[in-house]
Amino acid sequence: MHLLLVKMSSMGDLVHTLPAVNDALNAVENLQISWLVEEAFVDIPLAHPRIHSVIPICFRRFMRSPIKTRDEFFGQIKALRAEQFDQVLDAQGLIKSALLARLSGCRHRIGYDASSAREGLAAVSYTEAFSVPRHLHALDRSRLLFAQALGYTCPENTAQFGLKPNVEKRLVETQAEAPYGIFLHGTTWCSKQWPEVFWKQLAQKVTQAGFGIKLLAGNVEELARAQRIGSVVDNSQVLDKPAIADVMVLCAKAAFVISVDTGFGHLAAALDTPVLSLFGPTNAELTGIRGANSLDLQVDFACAPCMQKECNYKGSVQIDNTVVKPACFSSLGPELVWQTLQSRLGLGNLEGSEGSEGSECI
Image (cartoon, rainbow, N blue to C red; front, side):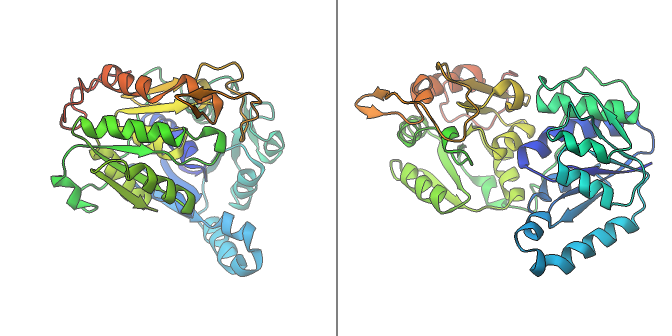
C-alpha cells in the first residue's frame, strides 16, 4: 500500500510524527510512505531511511505571494495527483492540511475526528476519522492515530525516531573538534525565551568545565543575542542560519544541548543527544521534548504554564538586582540548570567528557 502522509510543519510536529511512522512501517506489510512536507523542512523526513519519498510543497510561499508562486504551487499539486496514492493520512488536523489531502486526488482520506483535530472543521474533508484524546502528548497522539487508521495495535515500546543524518558528507570538520554543547536560545514566542543574562552565566560555567559552545541563530534578533552570549566566553561559535541537515549533524556530535521550547530541541532529542529543555509558558506534558536522553524542566510559577505568546505578569521579579523577564523563569535559574545538567544527564561533572556515551536515560 502506498500512503501519502500529510504533515507539513512545524519542526517539532514533524519530529513528533516520526515514531508513528516507524510503528506503521513495522506493523503494516509492504507499506510505502510518501511524506508531503513544507519545503523548508524536507531535511527531516529525508534523514529517515525508510521513507519512500519526500514531496516538498511551497504552501507558505503560496499563501504569502499567490500570484508569484501560483504556477509552481499548482504544478506541485498536479505532480501530487499523478502519484495515485491508495490512502492519504492527514496527521496535522488543520484546515490547510485537510485541503491538501483533498487536493491529492485520493478518495480514501483519513484523519482526526472533529473533537480531536486541532481545527475541527478539517474533519469534514476526511472519509474516515478517528478519536484521539487531546490530553496526551503530541507524540503519543500521532502514534494512536496511525494505529487506528492503519489497523494495528499501538505499540507500548519506547518511541523510536529512526533519523540517520549523513554525518560523513556534512560538516566533516567537526570530527576533530573538542567536546561542545549547543545552546538553542531562539524561539518564536517572546515568553518562551530564557533570560539572556542566564544564558551568559551558564556559558561561563560550561566553558570553565572545558566545553566549547555553539550558538544557533535563525534571524537578525537571534544572531545579535547569540553574539552577545558568546562574547562573555572564549570558546564559542555563532552559527547563522545553518541548514537543518547540518544542525542534525552538529546535534548528533554534541556532548549536550540546552534548549528552550523550540523545534531544534525536539530534533536534537530525536537523535538521542542529551537534551535539557527549559519550559516556561508552554506545557511540557503536552509538547515536551521527548528522547532517550532528554529531560524537561518546567518552571514553578503561579501563572505557568499560561500558553501566552507574551508575558502578561504584572509584578516584578529581581535576582541580584536584575529584573527577570519572563518572570516565570526566575524559578529556573542557571545554577539549577547547571546542576541538573551534571546530575541528571549522566555527564558526570562535565570535565570535558567525550560525547554522550554512558548518558542516563531519563
